Image (tube, rainbow, N blue to C red; front, side, top):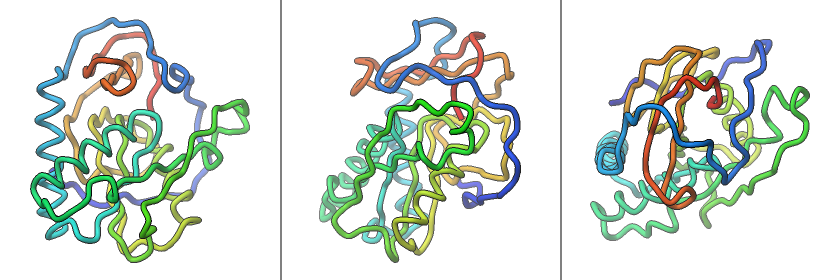
Length: 213
């Protein structure tokens, strides 16, 4: 469900967003499940087909997952794309993009765990880069990702794929590919779990507060 390109906007940051669980760790299970494991699989399969259709194949694709949970989602998307186009090497399509040092709230939360940035062998110049994340919320993580990407090369185009779009944007950024649009209140928390990190695939929503961006 393509809805337009990711567009950066430079402006003063608004109120800080409380941090979620540390990388690689999950919050306690609670709330209502809004996506089951089979539904997540179907959503990723659909996104993979939409990416291929929009870009007329996968020959110039690079999928950059935003740690923590965006990276395993990017790897799954790459495998599904390679299933449709067997001449593609799924591993060669995927990289990771750490945005920690590009966040506009770094001065408010200076102690953060740095992730890794790893690009595919061909880099990103003149490629179609698809940023992959688990939840799209305020848009500030994606703004940071665009800044980080700018320091790595000059893609031909940049697109955004997210498993969940929960609304409440603070910047004019929107996803090109969405697994599920999930209306939420600011008092609710969206918890994404992936088997590679959390040993289970699930998306749940509860009233514990904010965590994603």
